[in-house]
Image (tube, rainbow, N blue to C red; front, side):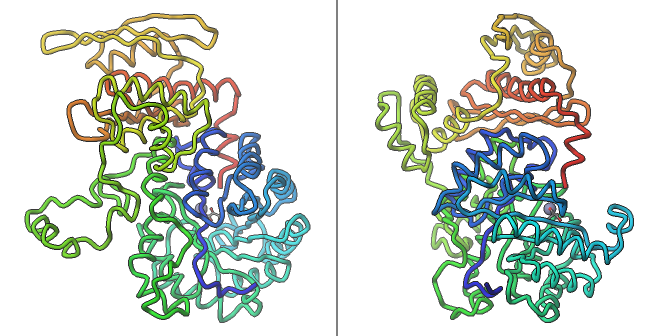
Length: 534
Ligand code: KIV
Ligand code: ZN
């Protein structure tokens, strides 16, 4: 093993670090849907979760290992603190994966040692070695992270890394846990490690970083120039606080500027060979899937996947692009899988055409999922004559969403207008199968619907985010509603798509309430969950 791989390894942590942001909590089936898409995207490693954190996390790692961790599939990884019980849980959950990795970590910065771990440097050094060796007794592929590495004393960091590699770590990951470092500093840390850790040639150097100062991607690119060969990132950059380094930004920077980066990987500058294994045409779809399932909206001006990323508003820019796209565009939108929103299907399209187009778009649905999605497609096609790829994607993402089906919307009816008091009537089917109807007056139709739903569900909550986006242009467009609500210290999200935005709003709210209701039923205490997150 050497730290000089000839390409960049993409380690996706959307399902572990990404899932740690408030409200992004995914259930097992949703994690599986994302893991399958990450495999299609071509990531090398999927950090599927933190097996010891909860029975749900354990099951998710196990299921992803079984279904996505195939011979030619990605490496499936579980996080584990440098504690025996954590490592054992990770090893057990990863058993079904053909290629598995345990990722174990312990803090190395003085501030963490003094206030969090209350351990001496000598103790941490010993634990790191002992626990890497323990992880190694379960599998050959072991990653070690000295948490808060970017704020650690470099000499101590070198010692810990040398010990971890001697104990069997095949990847050593350098986290900027608090998003504090700057690009040149981070580059210098990687250079220092290569120059001062005697056995570094026996491990891949990885980087992990948070975006508190908006520098995570820039830091990683500098790390690559200095010898890092694995990048730990998330789709849409979601994650703890300001998030993690964004996968799509890293991959596209390495792709668009490969002539600049090639020499740092020992390639001729003009080599056209890709620097990562990522199928860039899957990027947009993956971004939408993660956004829909987590309820974490993508800001319109977000690089690569934001709604405005390829839109030219200024007259001068539009003029230039019409004459030659390269005047103002550094990459083709099709490269990330943005189609021209072609109109492909209509109400006379049959199941076969529907299935074929979905396949072309990269959706592999089970027969049950396909049947459900086809029924929705027909409903939408009755209201909207022309169904584009984006509509299809919204329909399918909505149908395969796996919010627990506890309360079900049976009827939504509103009355509103300039001189009317917005009034809503809703009928919900309860988890016990009873149909309950209630009505309420609100400040607007959506408020009235939400008040009526609350009267039925009767779980106190605070709506903290409500957003409507239209999937395509036109009066008959599908509207997507994403909401987030708070219950005590926890946030739950819901998403729904419908040509009627009042119905989508009701459905999104009920999806979020179902998540909340299901969490209350499993009696997972908020403090327990957050205590396990790192
Ligand atoms: O940010 C961090 O340091 C982490 C580690 C567990 C790698 O997420
Ligand atoms: Zn992290």
